[in-house]
Each structure stands twice: as C-alpha cells, then as structure tokens.
Amino acid sequence: VWDIRDGKCKKTLSGHPGVVLCVAIHSGANLSVSGSQDSSGRWKTHLKVWDLRDGECKMDLTGVKGPVSCVAISPDARFCVTGHWDETVRVWDLEDGECKKTMTGHTGKVTKVVISSDACLCVTGSSKDETLRVWDLENGESKMELSGPEESPASLAISPDDRFCVSRDKDDTVWKWDLATGEQLACFCRYSEGGEQLMALADCWRAGCHPPALEDGPTGNVVAWPGDDGDTIQWRAAGAGSVSASDPAVFYIMPPMSFDGCFRLFYAKSSRSVLFFDEVTCQFVCYQLLV
Image (cartoon, rainbow, N blue to C red):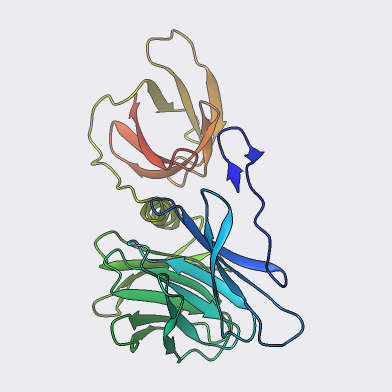
C-alpha cells in the first residue's frame, strides 16, 4: 500500500500462494480485494479481502481452482466480481465470503471486469473470444454480447448513469456501446480526436468525476492559444507578460501535454476554451483560449 502524496510504502500485505495478478480498492470502506495465481494447480485460496487500516486479511474467498485475473468491488462494498482463467465470472459476498453466483459464457480467460454504479450489472472482457459480455447481477444471466472488437480489452469503463460502456482494445481501438440495446455507438483509433476524447471520458468515469460544460469564456488561472504554425499550443499564467512554455501538439488531435508540471489529456475544444483531463488530480481543467 503506497501513499501517493509522498511515494512511501505504508504497508506490505502478504499471504498469497503465488503471483498477485489483480487488485481492487474501495476507499470508502477501507478494504481491498486481491487475486493471485497458484502454480501448484491444487485447490488453494486465490482471493483475499484486506482491511487497509491495519493491513490484516479480513477473509479468504475459497473454492477457486486456477488463477484470478481481474476483480472489481461494488460501489456499496457488499460484493465483488472476479474474472478467472477457467472462463468463469464469479460474484462474492464480502460479508460472509461466499460465492453467490458463477456465470459462464466466455470461451477464454476473463481478463477485465467493471461494475455499474447501481450494482445491477457488470461488463466483462475475454482474451480469447474477443467479446464483451453484459451480465445481470441479480440473476447471473448474460444480458447481451458486445461484438466487434478483434482484440482483448485493455480497459473498460461504465458511465455514471449506467447507459454506456467504453472499451479500449490492445490494438488501441476505442469503442463506445449502448448498454440498453447493445448498439455500437462509436469506434475510433486511440490517437484520433474521437479516441482521445472517449479515453478521457472513460478515465473520468473510473475516477468518479464528470466533465463540466465547455463554455466560451475565461476559466482558471492559465491561458492557452494555438501557435502560428497550428501545430503548437502555447500557454502562460494569467496576468503574466511572457510565454512560459510551448508544447508540441497537433491542434485538433492534441496528445497529452504538460501544464504546470502535470500531464493533461485533451478532451474538448470550443472557440475560446479548451478542456483537459488531469490524470494526476482526476479532474477536468478548462483553459481560456486566446485566438
């Protein structure tokens, strides 16, 4: 357990029988769930629930044979969902440690899982069948299959209103889905304008924040404007008389740029404002554009 403010290790949690492959954290409940691999192939504990206040193992989630590759904790910390190398998805009660549901349908290792904010559904991805599945967590049934990606998902996110899902493949293709109908709403290259915006949006969903409305007017203490060649963004502190820095960027497909020592991902632009997602603070930052 690391303190991200000073970079120091605060606790070391030990007890897994093999390599730790996944971990999820619930800051409000001060708990974490981790999954591991056991090379012996015997029935051993592969899931542990930790109390982050004292670093003690609260319980073992037992009865799993084979590695656990991904885990997500429900927003209310009542249960967690795990993905396994044996192609199953399991739902665990975090109060009594029992496995409540075992869901089948994938034909490859389940490598990604994300839970909706209302804890009624989850989305999983597999490394072999190259599909995403939407599961009803009430009855354990597969609601739909989201097909189209040709690579296993590298990341998943569900919108705060539980209407949409964004996934990124390992080949850097970004997809957006309607979770009510299963319709594919968008597909972009990761480094296109649409791909950058979708990834910034997915990052903010995972961080639990929402992008503000982009307004045409001054916001914040930094002003930025396009360079003469159209391929640079220049910025300075508001009120300063000279340029503080110049960062190379394609004007309409801006990659992450460093402002105030923090990398911020381009999200959206209007005629007088530009919006960035700050991956350090997990917040959106809006700058006035001087055109």
